[in-house]
Length: 62
Image (cartoon, rainbow, N blue to C red; front, side, top):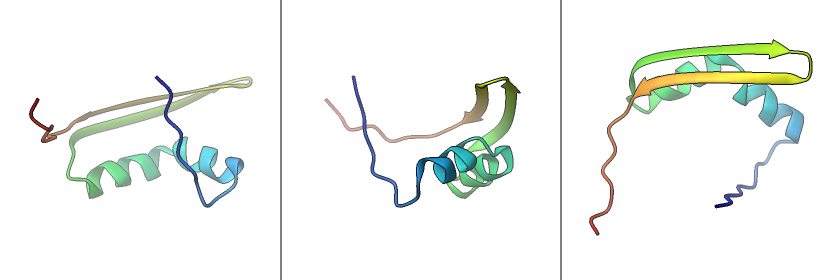
């Protein structure tokens, strides 16, 4: 499966936001998610984002 999304910002700005734990936690809080924890680690050219939260989603019925 492949998903694409056009962003209005350049790749560096999007990467900076998506690897900023404070921004990610605020985003989750704004969405009403609970029990949020986020850790971002960098190792050379590799960046790992570990985001955990409890979410409630209403999925469409099949």
